Image (cartoon, rainbow, N blue to C red; front, side, top):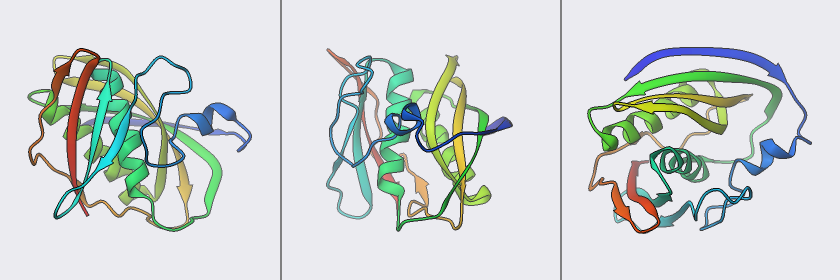
Length: 173
């Protein structure tokens, strides 16, 4: 559920290393280059659609890692991506952590489908009472690249582990 959206326009070059490090280069288990997050995600086999296993030290890192994992699964082809970027503020809510996760990822898909952008950096500013406020860095692209139609609730459960949280997310392609 979209509550409010704002965006600011800025310009930057592709030499910006912080831009490159926030998006995974390939779909695999990896350690965050800053070192403040544990291993973030890996693709898992699913009979009908596509799925991924995501981890995080807390709910904020779990949601940010899930956004990166979805982006890694979601690309098709090599688009022309503009240098111009926009930072968009997104607010979503859910009735529990699982619905917040699904709504967050579906909102990212919404931006990509409707505005023909690629989302790259994700920064969650606040989560309170199943309400999320975040900033997402987007770049315009020449076509819709999304292979994912929607994020589903199929077998979705956020579980506590000794290292933090984990979930398996199934997406409809």
